Image 1 (cartoon, helix red, strand yellow):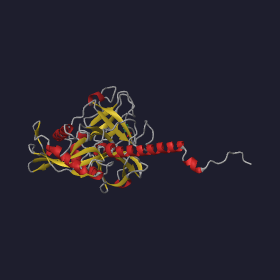
Image 2 (tube, helix red, strand yellow):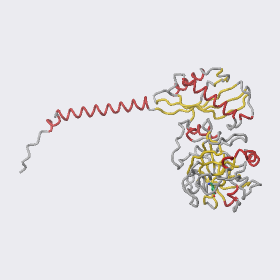
Image 3 (spheres, protein in one colour):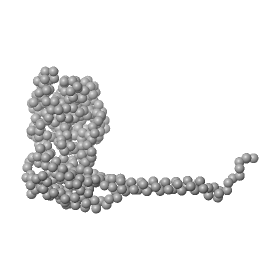
Length: 419
Ligand code: 4AZ
């Protein structure tokens, strides 16, 4: 026989004060958490909203200098417009919602210049989108008619943009990192491995589907690279181009139609180590695949300034190509310094550019050839300053990487491609 006490009647367990107490406490807790989550999502969970607008700049005459984001005129005017918008929003009741404004294009207009702007705001989901839109429009009306001698007539109409619209607006422009397209924080560059979209213009030029050289996307159909990549194989049918950071799983692949090598390329001196390659059809631009900006022929590349070199080249002299795109931060070195007797002793010609780090260690290497050396401008756009060309081994102190100086070939690029 069991020695257990008699079963407690179920009604009395139901009324057990402890059970009731814990039941009530649990119920209250669940309710509190639900309310807190609701408040969080309605009031504090902010979402990004993008708008486009056109501003008329009546007292600036449109000129060819405003055609390209590379010119000082374009940079100055766009920078001033962006700063007027930022100042106005930062002094308005939308100061906490306004994130950033960026001029994507300057166009000629019957009475001067028309600037196309993208603006980013963050507000909580319980804000009515229509009322936020009209609040933004009313702040735009507060933009002073004249701001430091710049006349601005903002359009009172703004248009909501989807993520895809924003990408398409930026794809008219060059040199935009995906973080600029989403008007987000500047990226923090650590480590040597690139993330998807970090270098959207980087191309892998492949000989019989094996990575051979780097390349640089300068339009939907044209790639810039080094002439020496084609020294032994210049038949375009043997070549393909892939896009995206992985060689093993490229985001896109295109056949090559034409290879145009500089007529005066000299493989002994490395002079004029430049070529353009035409794709067999246009590569569709995405947030992660698009062109870099080309500098003007007169643009100054300052010694000491920071630049980045990227590629799938070997990580040591004599090593193998790597599968994931790598990046290295280097500094521009003047031709004078680079031609010192302990360095290249006069071998660096005016159409070349040196970049490296004083103690060595960060450099382009075999397989990086034809790839980009880029710098960021004051508006966060990336410009091509060099094409990986040659150097004594890789990463040696006093033997920096030598690049084809893009500004010196700016007119040659236009002659070949019309860009
Ligand atoms: C090469 O063999 C090569 N350190 C490219 C760049 C450099 C050296 C060699 C620069 O393609």
